[in-house]
Length: 437
Image (cartoon, rainbow, N blue to C red):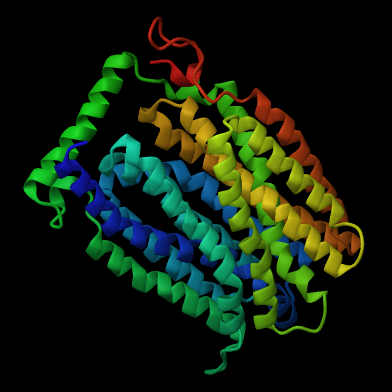
């Protein structure tokens, strides 16, 4: 890599990565903050456990339906305008959550929030493919994903503190939605001002740096085109059993993550007489532990290379923690969830290199969007089932057993997932449908 290209790459990272991380933090908080107001909405609006679970999960239905179309529209209208649009609409809908009147409006707004956020994650992946050489995308993606980890830690204390705000006849939970959603609306203007859709538009790059970066990315694409002579068929991609496996595995991971995310504040409240801010602080503990685990397992996977085995190990840890949380009192359950978080968050981070290694780079962004949207339906199933079980039985124990069983099944299925395309690329074209070119 030439010095000019290195300089261009460094400038791009410095310019966009801090903004992307902040966007991801805000995105995550607006997605999960409903978990902290469940009891408030039940008291003020009469929204019970089953209705809460269904509403929390409907976000992911809207998200799944609009994820791929949103990513296609981003390519048409450009990252600058479309990412700013995503932030504006999700911020407006998040603020509107403050004016929920009952179950129906709760369901509608959660669905619309998912539809508004759709396309954000794959849109960032697509941006990296257009702006960074392939050797730099993995590092950039790791920094971007840290936003989710940071948001997991700070969402509890921040949301807990905002719940104490009052005035103008509004409850604390209403102010929380208005303030957190309003921050997204404000941030959208910074996104529109700071992002560029194409390298040629970047004022912070010199002309030689623009040329070096454009030439590098175009050369990488030419090499791919020469290596794979037939473009992958979308229908054959959808019929690929490997992609179906990837969707199931990520669904299992998301099922556990969101089962814990949406119900953890309620579980913490059973530990004692705590205020919203204290609940938020306790809610941060599993995520702090999980961040340490994510980096630890990533280092081990890099040193002792067998990606499926590491993902499987993490899924087993998640299963043991979820199963153990059904025994003992609330404090023991909280400790068990902390243990499970080591597994399900690390599994989430370790999973993505597997489909990335299998897919042709030209379709990777679109297929990753598909895996992400279908897999995230676990975020619909988990809270919906948990809410139904709590309302009908007074306990979520059956749901925790289900999460443990699903994680164990995924820990076995992961060994059937390939990290490389089937066939010899140096010789005849590969046989794996996801890599038919």
